Amino acid sequence: MGKAQATRSAILEHATDLASREGLEGLTIGRLASELKMSKSGLFAHFGSKQDLQMATVEAAAQRFYEAVLAPCQSLPEGGERLCGYCERYLDTLQQELFAGGCFWAAASAEFDDKPGPVRDAIAGAVGAWQRELARQAAAAGVEDPAGLAFEIYALGIGANTALRLLNDERGFARARQAIERRLPSPAA
Amino acid sequence: MGKAQATRSAILEHATDLASREGLEGLTIGRLASELKMSKSGLFAHFGSKQDLQMATVEAAAQRFYEAVLAPCQSLPEGGERLCGYCERYLDTLQQELFAGGCFWAAASAEFDDKPGPVRDAIAGAVGAWQRELARQAAAAGVEDPAGLAFEIYALGIGANTALRLLNDERGFARARQAIERRLPSPAA
DNA sequence: GAATTAATAGCACGATCGTTCGTTCGATCG
DNA sequence: CGATCGAACGAACGATCGTGCTATTAATTC
Image 1 (cartoon, rainbow over the protein chains, first blue to last red):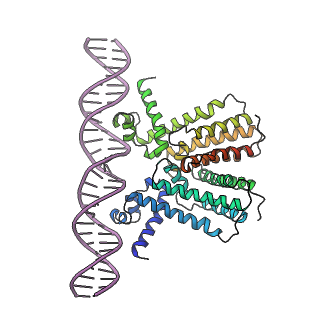
Image 2: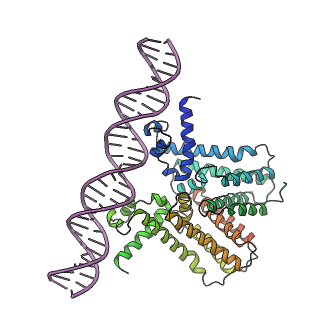
């Protein structure tokens, strides 16, 4: 890996956290550079434009989410078990704050759902893929309405995130887990 | 009502929509003024600072939400009926886009959950009050876990909003309604 | 209708935004 | 060693941000 690639990765690592706190628009090149003790122009050279930086940040966030939630469950058999694994990992990472400023996707979704363009498409792609993967496992588990279950799991996760971050109420996670358990087919441990 | 009050109201009417699209930070005084064909300073004079404008906008959004969701249900008897009314109104207004840029509260929550200060407190106050009111009616209806039900209703609404706005998938609302009906005690009418 | 007050406009400020340019430093290679 | 090249820097650009001032218009009161 060349030096440029290493620097770029370090930038994006920081950028995902900063964007989760300040939003993808609040993700300022000047601020990002100063926090990384780099010059604005030196940092900017790694990306041709702010939009490219945003796109790369979304990609990096998707990568981090994949490694924290999806990857550890790939060894589980498809269907109910992997679905359960997803749910546990999903809520755990939300609770443990995988991103410094709360769920990156909740912030990015709300911020860009009205701004057409490639950034919005990338966010929608990642969120949609996650829900489809949930639905795929639900279908393999024989659930009657897989997409509906995937929707509910996603919504409860976002709700728990809001409860924690905005209302300082950690009980949202217990409530989300309870609602999911109630909904799942009697789970195997 | 003096002229100033009327102008202020018109500004805030527009500001809530603009903020729902661009966020409370993206709610720029210059842009707001130009869209209203006012001078920046003329508009600014109605609020002492941008933070005051944001606070007033949050207040105006709360007022709009109250009139669209809470007010029409005040004639219903407390308990299950009013709770059902709330749910219908809540999802209907989300679906019909009470705010031009999707749910104001979803956007504001995600944007400010990491920024301590009076604006965040105002948002948290409004969101918390809505959930507590839902829980109050659930308790009056004899639900076993009123706060848990209120949490689920809120989360499903936000999820449906995201599905509609980000994923262009209107089915989120049907799924939210179905999940709520499944959860409610056999509803009257 | 004149005087007074309230509401809006015009202008300027420092700061910061994204972006571009020319330069310098450090490593790599012949 | 000297030549080359990629990475980072520093300065500057036009634009826009929030926020003060001062003037000018509009509304209200006598």
